Amino acid sequence: MAHMAPEYWKTAARELARRDAVLRGLIARFQGLALGSRGNAFQTLARAIVGQQISVKAAQSVWNRVEAEVGAVTPANVLAKDPGQLRGCGLSRQKTLYLGDLAQRFATGMLDAGAWRHLGDEALILELTQVKGIGRWTAEMFLIFYLARPDVLPLDDLGLQRAMNLHYGRGRPLSRGRMRRIADTWAPWRSVATWYLWRSLDPIPVEY
Figure 1 (tube, rainbow, N blue to C red):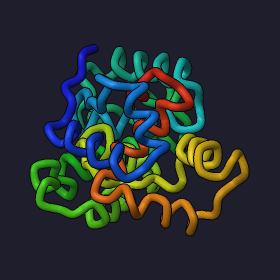
Figure 2 (cartoon, one colour):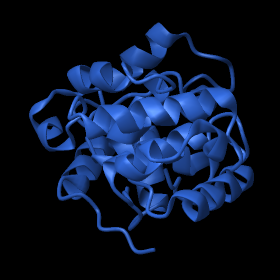
Figure 3 (cartoon, rainbow, N blue to C red):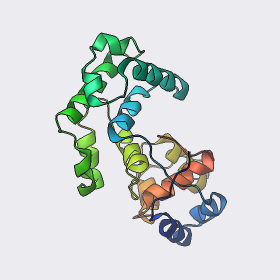
Figure 4 (cartoon, one colour):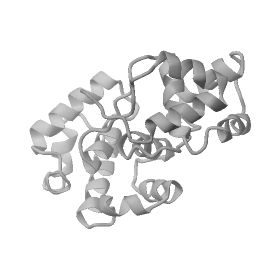
């Protein structure tokens, strides 16, 4: 699937390459790749809940069964099914509750994707983490991949931790404080820096 780079990407890459020698090398190696989002906000968050703590392959097969059961995965269609039918798709009792909670919040307008562009990153993360089953990491991935927010630093992400240990800690674990200080020089492009560091571990872009 072809992805369009966000319009800030070239500027961000140029500024990061100027400020940080590690990133300069990575940006030279991974030119022409960029973030991309897919689906709509409800489906993207629903998929994130379905995929928690299971392999990508298992998550895809559960998602396919949910689509077969529900039809288009919309808040109304999810709410029209009883929990037993959703559990029959391979969802745990807990994930069934989470999916119902998410659908309810979208259906009632408690979560309104149209209003998100007016919210800062932290305010939006706070709003998303009110949903059962969406923690900070999931919210940050959503901001990076779905909303293409340029300045998110997902300190809990294992890939980012591994890449920073490798490139900035000579393979030794860095404290969160040290990670944050290194990343201060990347602002306001911390999502872009994170993306290039992920690529250094795995050249295939993450599809969230």
